[in-house]
Amino acid sequence: MMSAVPEPHDLHQPTAQLPVVEPRGVYRAANHRRAGLVVAGGAAAALLLLVVWLFADDDEPVPITAAPAPSAAATSAPAQPEATGTAGQSEEPEPSATTTTTPSVRPAQPAELISALVSAIGILEDEDQVDDDDAESLARRLEQAAQRLSRGDTKGALRKVEEFQRKLRDLRTDDDLSDDGFRLLSQGAEQVRAALRRG
Image 1 (tube, rainbow, N blue to C red):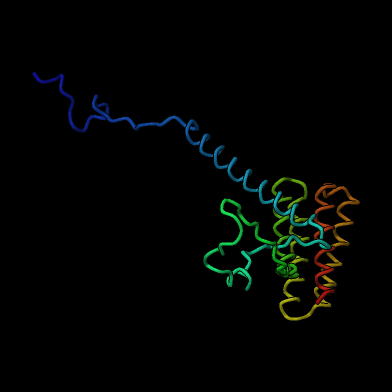
Image 2: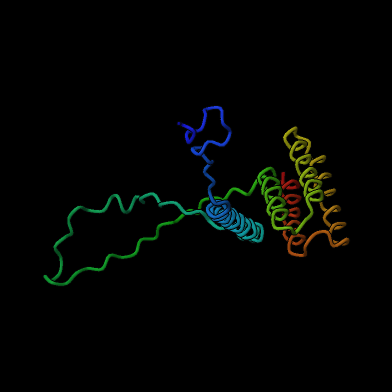
């Protein structure tokens, strides 16, 4: 009498395995928040560096100092001090009149400035200060300017930068671009124009 044991073909076997279901969203949401904070922090730091760089005064470049080379007076000094005067008195060395040369600072190249502006547009787009389509339109004008510049067409690059500036003004007039974003991009465009005119 083996009626209590189910047949192998029976669909209602008591030993059926159930799938393991993990709780959703608990750990995944924390990882997404953490990644979002890292990305937001990086974008804020990049924007801060870009703003500092763009707002830096072009008339007074920050000198990059290197360790000065030893002067001829310093290398020809005697190895041992002369014994003159009374013991216990130390002689003060006279200050030497050495000339220091300040290293020249290379001005930013137009292609570098254009690249920085394209990056700034991406950051402004991520922060919803400019619409996606408008950001793409602005970046396209700058990329066209960079292409013309790489071909040696400085006048063509200058025309594209001027188109970029007109588009900026239109976006600001239509309130499609934030005031801070407009100021940042306008000043950057002026730096690009000045660099293109320099050479």
